[in-house]
Length: 94
Image (cartoon, rainbow, N blue to C red):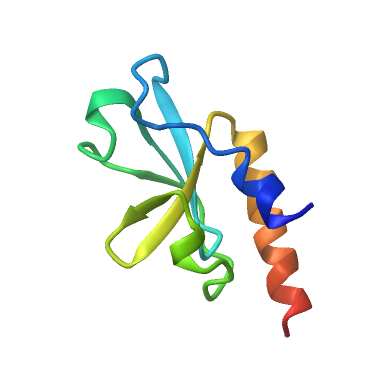
């Protein structure tokens, strides 16, 4: 899977029809948060811890929060696919 294929899984977290979304951060952490108008106005719940150092350049991530970046998806399965890809990229660069 390529970075472009990973980024193509991104959904707009501000769409009101999305109730909850998973965010996969550049370090592999997966969080669950509310979407729509209250995106990032409520707590994020950690589903999976970070896998290590940043792998994806934050400037390539569709969503930004301070110095961090994330990709938003609708399902835990998609989040884990992206997280596994991030882990594989880290292992390939070591």
